[in-house]
Length: 181
Image (cartoon, rainbow, N blue to C red):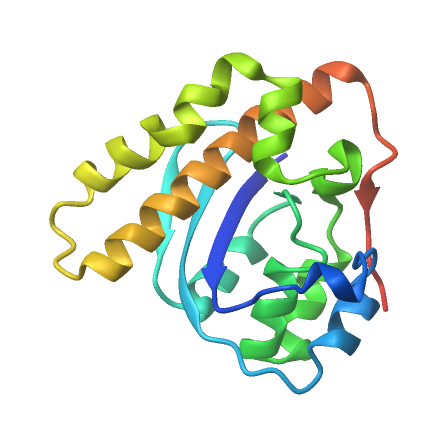
């Protein structure tokens, strides 16, 4: 079993006043005419803890295709929608067919609020520890904008991974999706 937990950064922004996006179809509808810019992504292999950074949606997609399961915080209505917009629906079909643990549905709030509520000891790491450490590790990346984006996706993917561990320990399985639309 190979589980991959990932987070992307892009110019995707959901306006909460338009309502909660509960399904990929709702997200596709809201963003049907949107143009997305991919800034970067970080992916963790659950079993080993290894992580990789990605600056290309195509490279991220190739990596994710190798997963047996996908883990995200809000991937069904954000990360996968961005990738689908950038690479087209055909290449993403394989990802939509994989079991997907989307923890937004489990925790029902933002990633930050989920960490505050479910793993309060992780709050200092979310508030700067993971970001700052990763930013320093990425010193070879000369472009500050990219370095900032990758440090942010690292923090969010790492916190999602910790939240996923808690999710698995809880025995919940009701928020595992397979979207075959």
